[in-house]
Length: 271
Image (tube, rainbow, N blue to C red; front, side, top):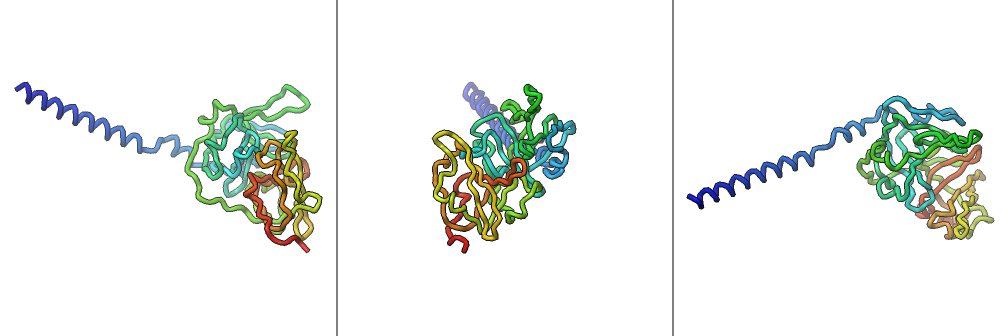
């Protein structure tokens, strides 16, 4: 009888364990409701950007969501405390007060951003998204980065996209509609004065501009941070195409690469 009771107890606890295990397994596999909600955007990036007036700041009071793909991160340190997000309608730079953002928000990751309470601003007419406004210098108010404590609350991480396809444009076609978008420029080369030169001043951590010129004669500045891990590498002398992020500073058109794998200048120079 004692043996039978012990055997029955083992069966009972074994069944209880199996019920608990499979119950937990089902709960684990079920997608959280907030993720399902997060990836149902009700605003495009183009619509979000249209709410901004240059030189002003706008707080977003509605509970709206944008969804996009990260097209630039801080892995090479050419983008400082920021990521660039793009959907089919446009792109926007997200100011984030953290380092090594690429660990959680790498290039190719789909993310959803809850906009309520965030702010729009611009730096040199480059539209950005942040968490507030710093008025400590009334003459020069500045957009405040999203604090790290709000990352998970504000940004939901999704799947990784297998391939990002840049938008092919000529330098002359670039305008504010293409800010913070992943662009490809064909038939370009560094001007002779900027070939075989360092991308930036790595020793003194100073950003530098190098001029890219197309075979049609149009030019654009390639802007590189002195903190970029490729800042001390030399620019190539050939012609070809580059990919990267279109930016502006005032009325000046700028182009930023994520790293030197964005440079494909292997052909003969323009005649």
